[in-house]
Image (tube, rainbow, N blue to C red; front, top):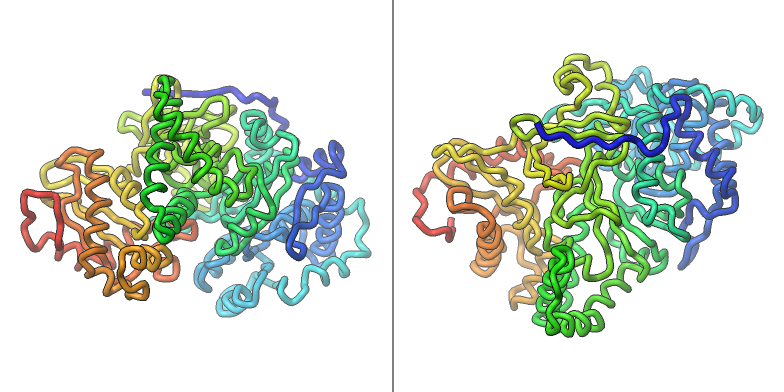
Length: 608
């Protein structure tokens, strides 16, 4: 059994809670800008001391409104400054937040609130409030609902003016490390969401140790980040708390369509993103170059970027010709992309799914080191992460201090340490099934290299066994195909079938530009595009590229392009845009059967 474990760098403090991190930050640097909020064309800074003042004022409002220490409070909101304000105000009031994805349906909101036993809810927008109201009749425990769009946070602050500072300080100090800090529900890709009990120590100890490991990223003078992925997810939630601990200035942009202008004005030093964001940046740049008649130059620049970065990582000498091309493309291509991201981004932390070496090397040549990491809600986000001093593209890095990882005999990744959750809320059976002693069984499969860098190879339950007995990991094929600009999502199929095949959806955002660049009507519907020979040839090209990395028995022999897309609303994606494989296989069982109704030829080319 392979095992890597790294002792914590920072001694544990069992008495510390998350609110202590803000207290310590204000003591250390009261005037440092901890947040920035949109202000006209620019941003207005909010200091650590000012943030704490606002937090205490809102915490007083919660206390005056009857929220008691230990009470559960639901929260539905986009990624804005108010998210962190409410988060810390609830910590100061002694309450426990139950974050709910902003895209959640009325039924999902009802489940999170009823299962957690929440007695109140805060909603940001009118549509969030409307969805809650749909479910309200089934939620007798919820006695208070506050609507941010109606100015209820300001009303709470006003209501709390009579609460003494001492009362908030008392509440703030009640929780110790082992106490519940938040109840985060899993995204539910394999059934009904389970509530993960994350403790104050999970966040405090992980933040303190991660800050030391990632000191070049978060403790460098002027460090700042622009958050745009949902703060209801543990990934962004942890980074938000880490930023308070480290003194990183944080801005927010909830509308990803406004991301590039926001990056240009905010100018962050590091980013937090999921692989799909990096794919979109790359694909958009490629299609823009294509439209301007510079597609050939861009592709040559991309090829040189990957080649240059790969040689650097392998410690090989860079040929003179490659150096010359790299310098030329740096002026023509790379510098423009750097400016598009604000001009100051040095690092990007990527999680949620594998990024792939090609994009990792491409961005590295832009001067942006993408630090891939691995973790789950149950591990308070990161368990491993590449760090500036120890990074290897194509892996999710070494284990973090205070964390241990072992690989079971079947390759399953198991985790223990400061980041592992306490239990599933009111679900002893699921908790017992998830642990082997103090090791949490992730359900993911991976491998370590000799230096302790982890690579994720797939999900244990998703391994496909063909009729010929070949074990196939879908992710190894799906990730490179999904990188193609016109591909939205991919699900590889073939369990107990004679060969591997794939269900494909098209990307409605990227498709029009690609169609225009290929002399096709840009307003072609998804259904018509799915049948178009040029579109099918492009998808086949992506599949052929993915097939290069696997054996013939593992290669995709046929595919079907569906006439619709998979979304969260359609029930096929989770809020973090992961595919709900079981749901897709059930809903599109007819399409799968149709693939296998006609015997495949001996070639890999599919015209199904």
